[in-house]
Length: 181
Picture 1: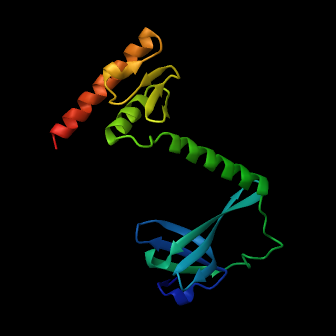
Picture 2 (picture 1 turned 90 degrees about the vertical axis):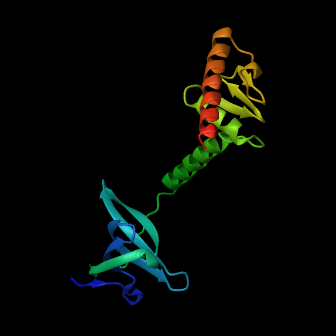
Picture 3 (picture 1 turned 180 degrees about the vertical axis):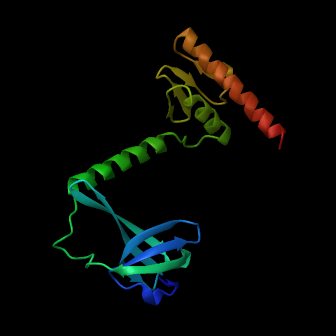
């Protein structure tokens, strides 16, 4: 079939094969095209199990390198054929919110970039969290500003020593990196 690149061809229900400027290739059915924002809304079908699953993709039309018309499908917005599993949708939303909250807890508020780097290094091998500007390791060892080995307090002597070693290594790494710049 002939390749097109005009937004005039984005009629609802058309099934298109699309190549983007980023090298991605996929097929989808046009749900709508918004001329004012230049956004094409596509439905990508995945048939798995007893119920078909659908992905909705919003794509700026100027990212389309080329597309090919593959045919005309059934009305994608036919309410009699639409199915939304609200429980699954709610579970996915809850999971995404929990994940975002966990990731947000990894960033110290009011701390220096150096303190964040030390936290990130400790988090690679040990369970850590922020308590305001203090790094809490294994819920027992605390590292306060200026985040030097002498700033490590609490916990068992072995845990304390382990945190000090990681802290010393990370400080050396940061100094080497800043000296090389």
